[in-house]
View (cartoon, helix red, strand yellow):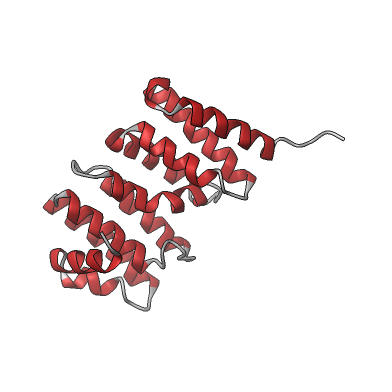
Length: 187
């Protein structure tokens, strides 16, 4: 689904007040929009295409996840925590946010709220899918904290779901890469 199609579908399905608040100038209004969107999602239990449209709509409104306001970043995490409670969340909805989640695993203000959401999403769309997404984005990450926390999440996924549900070769290869970039060298 294209960004334009997602915006159109979200605008048709969700109340105009919520949609308008995502374009507000004040971050407080946008934060309120996140809360209202979650309430409407929970109430209406939309089909997967509408859930995907709402995710891509929010991604567009948050400058393709480049939003720097911590309160709005927390709103993104809260929205995905809300998605994790729905029955019809698809892989495309989860894939839409994974670059943001992996990048923010290195942020001390967000890491502890992102980890449980990733575990919940793994339960919905398979641990293998979430693991592959983490590896995909973490493999190109620059910060050692991102690499370290990605390894922690991958370990947690293995602990929670067993190693049969994760891509073992990719996980091991990523672990080697992460270790090479986070282990201090002795001189």
